[in-house]
Image 1 (cartoon, helix red, strand yellow):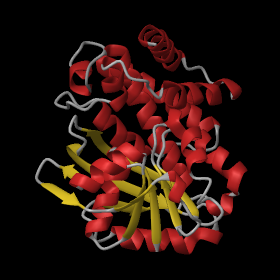
Image 2 (tube, helix red, strand yellow):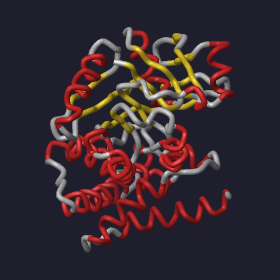
Image 3 (spheres, one colour):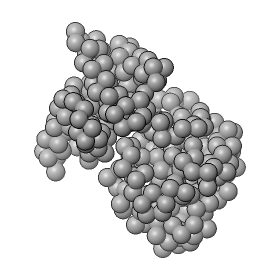
Image 4 (cartoon, helix red, strand yellow):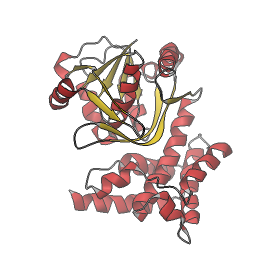
Length: 304
């Protein structure tokens, strides 16, 4: 299987490097500056337990050809349109595996390429690029969930999952990947909304008098929207998520909080705004989600 990964940031860089170490045929599509750095120094991965370097194959947009079986997309959601434009030379063949937040990107890919060419995937990792350009894994969490959305690409989906089994990260094959996508979105909307609104991590919020109650209410709004759209969150998933969202000993926070405090663009429209819109259409009340979204719109306006 020939795999093309768009970009070598936190998600694509980390999981692609792990796949490379396991012997997978991976090529990175990069901008010229990033390509030059990786050609000179390799792709450096820093984890809590080790640092390693791989020497991947790299190409730029001008070198693209339609020769890849799987095209992995992991840009920030606000860079999605630019990502699609950069793939024009490779998009006539292959199945797309997007690892983005929200769900609008799935609809866009379905419209442009057809559902038969669009898998589903969830990447769970806290990772960023260091000032030196290394991919830095911030916690031990490194999980990929993948699954087919059409029988037309089920074989590729399962073959990719087989490659992941020896790649050194946690993995799960979901027989209902669209439910998995909603489950992640519900969790992330709650985490991003609360941690950015309160400007603190899970433990700090949960240690306040009303923190756990507020977080639980926030999560309930997201669950209600998912249920209204036909994807109710199972009790086991709710318990697992709430345990993480209300752990008083946790230093967990959404990457959106880091982006916000550093003055970077955030994915508030894709994680919160799109969730709210799906709630409004179904008549679901979501005042906490709307408050968090309003706060982020105001803050982003300040930073522009």
